[in-house]
Length: 128
Image 1 (tube, rainbow, N blue to C red):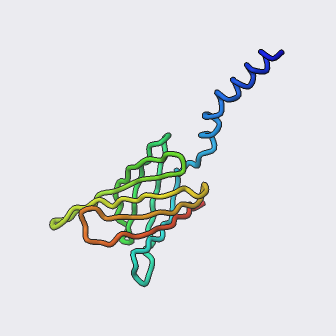
Image 2 (cartoon, rainbow, N blue to C red):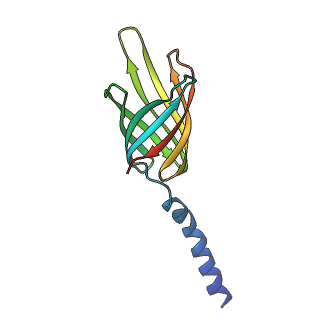
Image 3 (cartoon, rainbow, N blue to C red):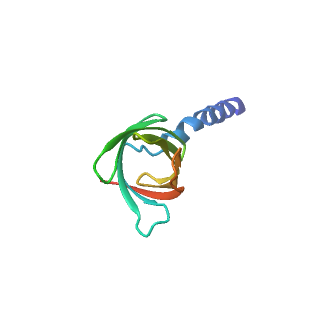
């Protein structure tokens, strides 16, 4: 009897990691971002994500409806993604890091690597 109970407990413990990851949010879909870089108005932009496991891809659409490819990762409740901006004068990477608060809400920080813009903060809501 004790051996059977021990086997059941061990099986239950071995299945726990799979169950823990099963509830992670899938970021696939359209997200509305409000970015605060210290100006009087928030910058509103749109991201469309496709998540495949930990891999995140998609597009960023700026206020002029220009799209840029996005790549990143999702690990647990942490998300990191970026896109490249370039012109004749300058090239930079815009990198977002954040925390998934719920299946429909994220928050985090943004930095412009190679550019002169100040770092900022963002909140995002998944559109229905």
